[in-house]
Length: 241
Image (tube, rainbow, N blue to C red; front, top):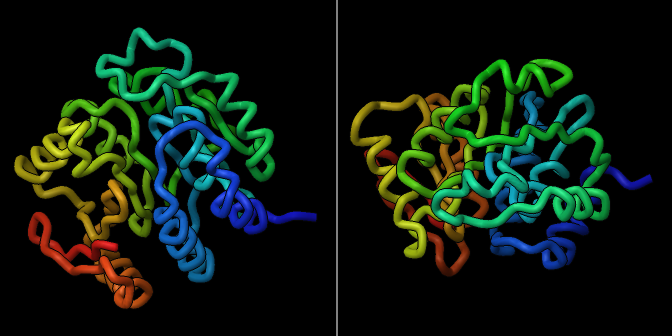
């Protein structure tokens, strides 16, 4: 019987190409690296994404699940009146069809339809079989500065300290609102989660406590790659791969 690791391997090699959306192939080896480290270190937690579209990156997240863990998919889905910046155009049936084809035990996915700007903790409580606490979280919802700031704050509120948050479309010139939102987020306060890595439009954050661990993990794994570079971002070392 195939395991979640088998599903992840097949999906990250060719399966993701069959799902409409935006995720570069280089992100999956980094996701695999983080997932394996967390599981080998016995770090607990679920996975989640705000803005799943048709599931291109979310299915990769879902296939990271270990025993007893669940995935949380937050999206406006078919209610496109809330898609104020036209960042994607999710379709619930396509998402479900893709999950049924490519996801390990798709019934372990909990769906929460709605606009993340109005998301409340009780909304998650109502749809999830138990309290959700994540170890990997993807932020890929509305691409305005307001959505970006809000969604990072939502992610942090649901994350363990050892969690990794992916913020999609950072540095993407087609979506400057994400870059503006991240800059405002760090300019106005001193958040507990800070950047440690960047791979193909995705900025990666973790808590101050775990920053060195994940930064070193990326450096040791990717330092010989031709495009690797260690930079400073908002006062923190970031491995660009």
